[in-house]
Amino acid sequence: MQVHESRRQRILAAEKMLKVVELENLKKQLNPHFLFNALNSIKALTISDSRQARDAIMQLSDLLRLSLNLGDQQKAMLSEEVKLAQDYLALEKVRFDNRLRYEFNIQENIDDILIISMSLNTLIENAVKHGTSKTKNGGLIQIDIHTFGHDVIIKVRNTGQYNPQPRTSANGIGLDNLRKRLELHYGTKASFSITNEEDTVLATIVMPF
Image (cartoon, rainbow, N blue to C red):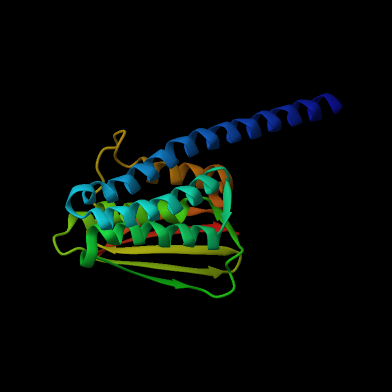
């Protein structure tokens, strides 16, 4: 009996270690992807508007500082994720101007709940990259976060249509990683979906907190 229990414990320990390694590898893929998109936001400004470019660089500095801190964590407080999202969207606003509009609707008193780090921002990056940047007149990004029972529900809605393409090194890595990280952390207790609703795309994460 003790032999079987010892073997079971070794198997569980190995599985846990595998999950840690997988999560670390996924994070290493995710953070450069996030930062690459942020750098693209100021690239066009370096020649056309030097003052805005300087402002954007200052915003990027703050963004990098916070994102690198979050990158060292498997989970982060919701308030940290929201601050990162606000900084990122402010930087993108410099690039897109009136083409990008956004609004936050966040339930009160949930700032300190823990969520998967970079999860909200993966959805927002996707909304900007495949929504705002692809439509002539830009559009609106709506961020809605609330709790239900023991779950936190994160919704990001953006103008546009979701047309999934075969994944390449530059396409879909953020969403793929998000799915894998949710599964590794929570198994079947978490879910992620992205759907078209008329002229908008709705991405939804449900995870325990």
